[in-house]
Image 1 (cartoon, rainbow, N blue to C red):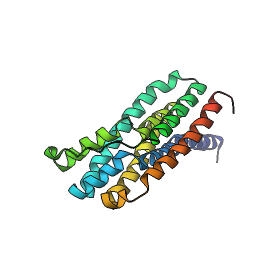
Image 2: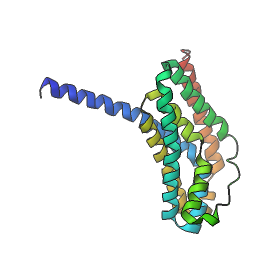
Image 3: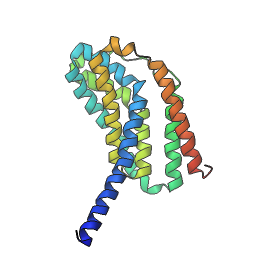
Image 4: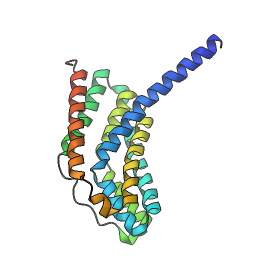
Length: 205
């Protein structure tokens, strides 16, 4: 292999590593954050009425739209942040996820039956997931890593995985899971991660 080939291979490896730095953490964080949130419970309820396929199509579009907004905002803000500022933004997002995880997810809407199965599910899931913990984390990670769209994609995939499982299980089976315990446990994980990230950004750890 020539020098040019080696350089090209090295650059490809660097780009791949950078992509994974945004994609994988966003996927894991969104998966954990979504476990105790409203979208999967809504998907479980709506799937019993309209079927898994219709609800999942609506959920994918809703999650993609919300995370696309997070990715776009992150892409605009990232060049304006210093490395310390990026770290602090991620810490704030993690601490926000921890704090909100200590409280109940909130009342679930009944749906929009007049709009039909697909549009009604789309509107309800979009309103429930808009600005939630996973999208805020995707925004922060995208701002910090510079790969905003990969962070958004990872977040949408992580949240979508949880929503899919909930829709397949149905409301009765999903509701029997220890969701409150899961929510508190993930909040503790986010608290520790946020504290460590914040101290590192402030050069105290």
